[in-house]
Image (cartoon, rainbow, N blue to C red; front, side):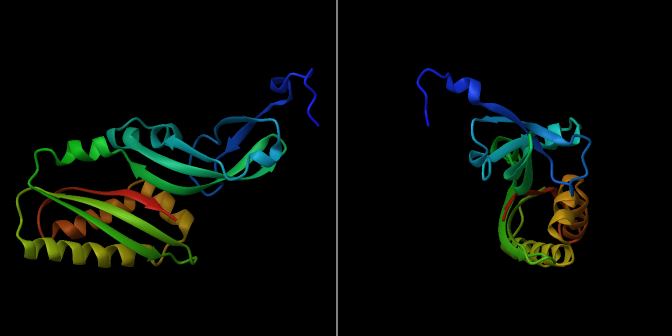
Length: 190
């Protein structure tokens, strides 16, 4: 029932979007969204810089984005869940600009709790490498990713991605095959 005399803006309310419980962050609120009807709030996607979430201003977190989806409304708060992560393409191009070999890899992995995620990784070798070394790096990357992620639940995976522990462990293993400059998980989605 729409009344033309009533201003629609006055019907709208602000709702706080809450960070999921499993994220280890200092902030508990991602931001605010506005709506005149609570039924419009679920399934909205929100992109938030990783630097805003973890309150740390380093180069990687400034260019990284966590993607959230709103799930349920409780009073004036909207619950959310993590559905993706990505690093800006401009940052990746900057890392690979003067390097010789860049390897992109895509892999679908099933986690311990049954969720299947698609993970895209980015690897930069310090010098030009042969096709055999590339193949060996890809094989090692694939096995290490499976070994790391098959024992983790989705919340554990997201927290280890935020604090870079998973990336550092895989970087050390890949560096045994050939010296590499950078290894990043550039994107994941459910």
